[in-house]
Length: 357
Ligand SMILES: *Cc1c(COP(=O)(O)O)cnc(C)c1O
Image (cartoon, rainbow, N blue to C red; front, side, top):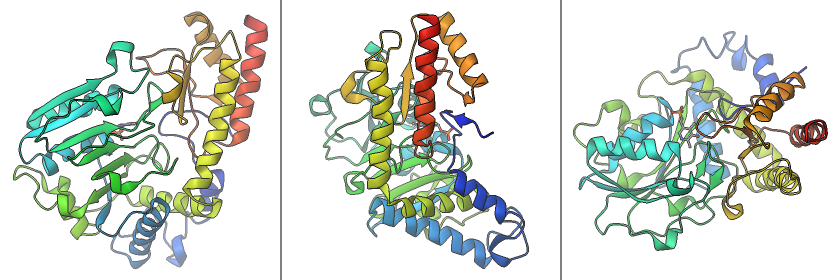
């Protein structure tokens, strides 16, 4: 039986996509070869890259003056690529709302004067700072945010209105809700949360801002070079890009981002409503900023939390253990988590509460 997989990443993928990949695993697009075997210069593969790019442009309404790149090294490598491509005056502002944005800030400090201009660490990242009251610096090269905080389960509701280019790590929510891409200079996302298996990272960057990477920037991290080479500067993660394209096709067939967002709101609503109506389970995040992708919660004790995770797994609800920084549980309910998976989780939570309250 297929488990309901609540892992934060790598995470569950649409079953129909997995089946499609399985069907054509030995013979990709009539080549007589597996997609894992062919050259990245093979026409059939180039077509897949181009289709992936154009689907992403269509689904996210990405204007033509933005580059759309498939790169490697995970979102963590982009923590360095951001300053290396954008930090011309040596100054950048970071909003720290969790572990990943803190890491991005720390990476930024290697290359220049990266400042944390707002943080929610004072309340263990259970909220997003009021973006209208942040003292951004006058001549900063960019402002960096993480739009959805995978570990702590928060998300931005409004984005900061800044003069400087706005850069966002959207790894754990890309394609889960409608975003006005033109508000951002750069959006990047590791694919393994909402889009594909691990190995590929999406970068969406306004072309006129990426023409002058710092001289020390490694060639592989120059977005301009990746753009000029249509993401085929070197051997790309072919299988992950192929899978991303299948997921994007699937998303388009579902009705696009607006439709998946409605489903996501519905799924998250079911789970939060259940938690809020229970005196046994708690979600500590300020309601306004609750993520619809990652839902952390606790029972009354760490012992019960551990028991919950174990019993849930025995019931086919897996990877519910919270991040080591937070403890408790975390249900990651990305695009590919079916409504039935969330309902099954809630039924299990009810039963566990009855047995242990
Ligand atoms: C998972 C995650 C990362 C790290 O991604 P890697 O691909 O492992 O480098 C960074 N930012 C966010 C928001 C994430 O969820």
